[in-house]
Image (tube, rainbow, N blue to C red; front, side):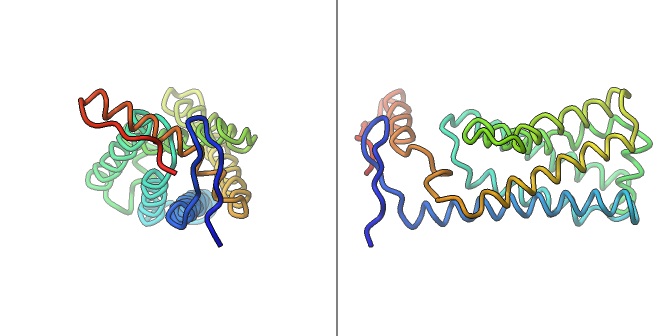
Length: 218
């Protein structure tokens, strides 16, 4: 069976097997991030706050892989989210080094400024949530986008207590999980977007560099 062909803004394009693999990889990576974040918060609030590092590692891995396969028209925005992810990962490594892998949660509770170190990781996740809301207008996506900065910045500024922050993050992680589960049965074309726009933007970049410009890929 031939690949489906769609009419884009700058010409026709097709959704091929590579696109479908990338979309599935993106959705599974985001699902991994959602499950890891929810598990981290459950362990923090109802079990043992020590040794949250493995969940944080899985969360970072899920966000990083999702940013690898996400389809965003604006390359600078895509790169900015990846930079935030990298800064957040480096901050988490610094926190683990200074506080010890088993005492990261305690360090965050004792010194709110550590939130500045790992905050960029969650800012990248909020960026993914904004992309999902912008493309699909899902309420759970705007919940992810708004609750993350409200919870973390509120805690950093001393406006929110630790328990309230955890409750807001718990709600956000539940919304993220709902978002991921609702995305799984969607057709791949929904996440790919208009490939003719990607081709057009790439052609403009080549033109600005003085390179050869090719037509939109079909």
